[in-house]
Length: 118
Image (cartoon, rainbow, N blue to C red; front, side):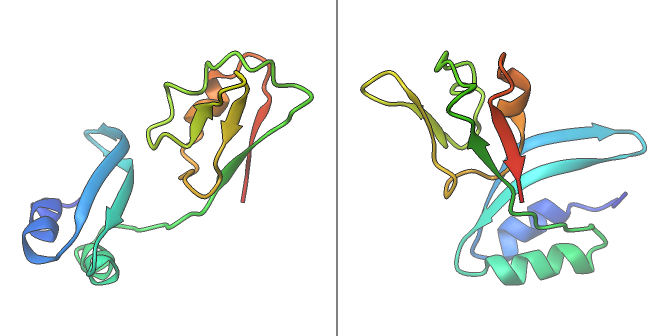
């Protein structure tokens, strides 16, 4: 728990954009999946760590099992970074370079065709 405006200070003091993709917060603490971009992103991350926030950069991506996928599109609208799209031929495509590994699509897939890999 941090009792100061770390995120506000980060945005004011560093050339970064800050995007909260998912947040699970309760009175005892919480976790956020965030995206930080900009010319001073590395300095901004160092600032957050020095302020007492545990930073765990993870590069997870999702992969689609083509044999299990029925191309229903349930995963498309739930993706916070638009890494999953419906192609012109109505198949679902997963762009693992855009994926941030939040796993939301895995929960929405009725056939469990989407798996998270490190």
